Length: 146
Image (tube, rainbow, N blue to C red; front, side, top):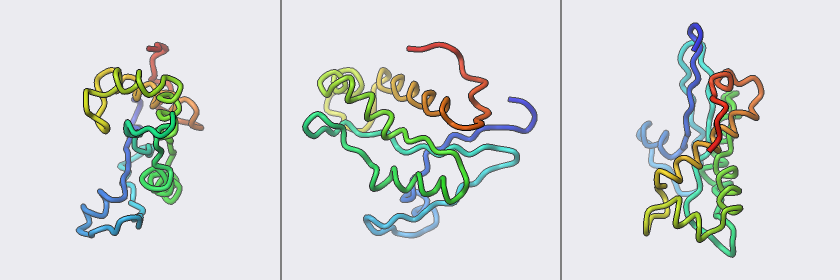
């Protein structure tokens, strides 16, 4: 990347910030974290990816917890925001529960993806980056698709 410019891609979780600061967060009470940006960097906050939890054909969203807190942190600090939780959940729903469970997650796993699941999630990160306004990282993306 040119000059001192760098892009910091970070998933910010308020609970982790509270723990680092020695606080014990109460369930359901967000602590909006502070973003630490070094030099001439651009902060991009991503919501956490969805878990492999389905109800009547829909993936459970974190829009009222971690996802919302990540969006609030980005807004409070003037950072860009990618709602990975929503982007990936829509992709999973288009693919279907059975295929997602069989391809994207190891047997019995609901949180951590397989390598194939990580590739799908990475493609969603790229999709999110491409729609950000004035994102310097976009110029470094390859024109390849899975």
